[in-house]
Each structure stands twice: as structure tokens, then as C-alpha cells.
Image (cartoon, rainbow, N blue to C red; front, side, top):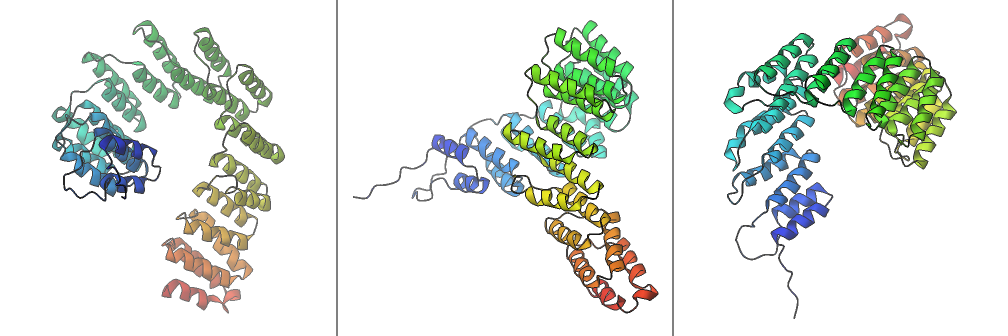
Length: 461
């Protein structure tokens, strides 16, 4: 007799969803866990299964499918849905720069078996803030009483909003209003204020606020707050203060992490104090603090600034040995440095090698290399890069495209120009500025034997 497959239980489904890496296959499994089942009873999904599939779809930015699952969740009656799950959905919309969907979902929360509190309201405010939707942010702040009573997190977001909009003085007013309402500021509140002050070169006020926080509020500065102050001190060249703050961290038994060391080393290099920067790097190693990708990128940038590209390449090799994966910034810095000194061939070789090293070029990589090739009059190579970057949906800067078109016209490479213009047209990247450059170049008296083919490309296509 043939055996029968045991049906998947809700517990088993959660286990399978957790191990399934492909979000599309996970969704297929979720929607139809027992495809061969003959009974018509609906599957009793667990809350954990919902949580797992929503997390996978949100991470993959599969929002239509996510909303399909949310529709099922809305009709569940067997359990209350914890609000952090809703906050995660709102945050996912924000990261994908979909603030309108975040608003729509927030307003729909009462239709779920759950309670909407200040937590989801704060998630929405944060989503609107990072999306720079200030008008909608203001609208929901004005309607706050409809949705929630503000807490410390709400005020932290409001303070951050003041600095992002260039209203530093308003941040103090929000801080005062917070205390009037007997809402106790926390370390994040002070950290947000101090970060904003440092970015506005108001270091003295930032230091006083830290003292007030410790003396009046009885709160202790954490590593993040010290890092902010050290960065602020370095940016205005006050390295003595930066080192005093670092020493203060050590006295207070706060662990100096890579971010602290990276901030100081990068600032010293930028100020031309390489020996001191290398000394701090050596101190970092002796303290047992492991270098991260940012540390290595700081070193790469310094060697490229000095045009010591072999040393920059050795840093990439060292990163491999240390199991620190080089990121796209690592390669962009070297490619940019090589292009700056006209070493376009080496830059192109490194660009081609990125895939082998497991790092995909981004828009900055393509723009840097394209511009470097144009500056070196290597327009044929630049055309290949242009074609590849357009295929990936990237577009060069307008000034670089103008340089490219002018160079091809001067060289009389009209066939290559025609092909490039056709590609720009297909991707809808052909701007009025490029029209003007082409017309002005091909219609010069010395070029009049060639212009009509090019103009046909512009007009007909």
C-alpha cells in the first residue's frame, strides 16, 4: 500500500517558513500549505506564521503580496495582533520610500483585531520624517490627540524633525514642552539634541547639555552620545577635546568601539595629521577593537589621496584575510582616485573585477567610471559603461553626458553617438540639454556632412 503524506500543521508551517530563504516560495507555501488536502476546512494559521511571512515579504519589498497576507490577517478572530507587527509594516513602507502606503496602513489598523497606541503613531511620524514628507508630518502632529498621547519617543522624533528642517531653536521649545508635560527626557532625547547641535557647529552648547543631562537629570552618557560629541569636536578641528572625551569614556568603563576610533582617524587624516592617525589605529589594534569596513575604507581613502594605489589594493587583500567584506564604497574610492589621476585602464579593470569579488557596482561606481573615461577621452569605453549602466536603470550626471556627446562629435564618432542616443531615448534619459548639445555640435560648418543622420535619431525616435 502507498503511504500518505502527513498534512502540515500550523507549528510545522512556522518551521518551514523560517527555513525557506526564497520569499516567493515562502508565500506559496503559506497560502497553500496542504495542496493535496481534500477537506475544505480553512487552515488555522498561527500568529508566528503571519509574523514570519510578513517579515520576509517586507524585507523583499513584495508589497502587493504583503498586502494580500494583511488582508487575511485582518479577518483573524483567534488572537490579538501585537502592535510591533504593525510598526514593522509601517517601517518597511518607509524604507521603501512609500509614505502614502504607510499612512493608509496606519489608518487601517483599527480594522484589525488589535489596539492602536502611540507606538504605531510614532512609527508613522518616523516614516514621514525619513521620507521628508514634512506637510503630512505636520498634519498628523496637529491631529495627535485623535490617535495617541505623546511619549518620550514622540518628542524625540519631533526634536529630530526640527533639526532636519533647519529649525534648531524650535528643538529647544519642543524639549521645554516635553518637560512641561512631565515627560522625562531620556538618553535618546539628549542624544538627538546633542547630535543636532553638533551638526550646526554649536559644540559648546552640546557639551553643556551633556553636563546638564548627567548632573541635573542623573542620566549617563552612552557610547553613541560620546561618539557624536567626538565627531563634532573633530569636525571643527578640536582634536584635544576629542581625545579628552575618548579618555573620559575609558575612565567611565565605556567600551571604545570601531565608530569612535574611525571618527578620530578619519578626521586626523583629513587634517593632514597622518602619523597621529596611524598612531590611533595602532592603539585601536592593541585595545582589541577589531577594524570594520569603515576603518579599512578610511585607510583606502588616505592611500588614494596620496596616490599610493598599490597600498590601497593591499588593503582590499587584507580585508579578505580578516573576513571583512569590502563594500561598494571601498571600490568607489579606489576607482575615483584612479580616474582622478587619469589611470582609467586600472579603474576599468577594478570595475570589471568587482563581480568576482562579490560586490555589485552602484550608481556612484558607474558615474565615477563614466566620468573618468570621458575625462581621459576614452569615449568608446565610456559608451560600453553607459550602455551597461542604462540597462541597470542608472543615468549619468547631465554634465558627464554633455562631455560624452561633445567628445564623440569632436572625434567624428557619429555612429557611436547615434547608438548611444538611441539607448538614452529607450530609457527615457534623453533630456533637452542633450538635444541642445548635439544640435550645437553637429551643426557646426565643419560637421555639416554628418548632422542629418544624428538629427533623425533625435527627431524620429
